[in-house]
Amino acid sequence: MLDPRIPPRIGAHLTARLRLEVPAAADLLDLIRLWQDPLVTATLGGPRDPDAVQGLLDAMITHRAQHGWGWWILHDRETGGFLGYGGIRRATFDELPEVELGYALVAPAWGRGLASELAADAVQVAFEDLGHDSVVAITTPANAASRRVMEKAGMRYDKEVLHAGEPHVLYRVTADRWRAPQTRPGD
Image: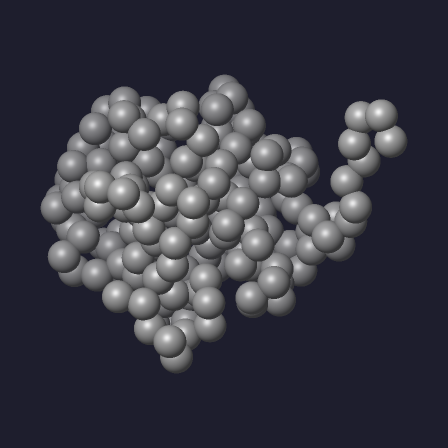
């Protein structure tokens, strides 16, 4: 439900094709199905058991309670079907505090531009609604699809980091670069 007391786009809201909802206990079964799909979790460290997924959901809810913003649960705007989760949250990489863009979508939603739609919205929320200076995202080096989503959101490769004991690439976009006029072919 949309709450008029929460600034637009920080709480539940709509994009062109997505309904972004604040995480709730009722989302657990959908998240368990997502995290038990080996195709979805191949670049996320593998499937998780229900207790681990409960921990992830609890962390999402706690983050929102502490900061007033965080990841959303994603639904198809037309059908209401569960699509995954994502958005922005506080994270630490190389012992530095960051605002992290993250996303995980059900496999049937892949290749439709939904992760890019979410990423663009989340970066806009980070800069316009929350006033952050920078947003980062990580993925495994071989995950070309996720790297492309990051690039479409204006991010550029920044450095390599270790995450969960594995090498990852970290992409970044600053508020200044995001707001700068884009050079277009032919200009």
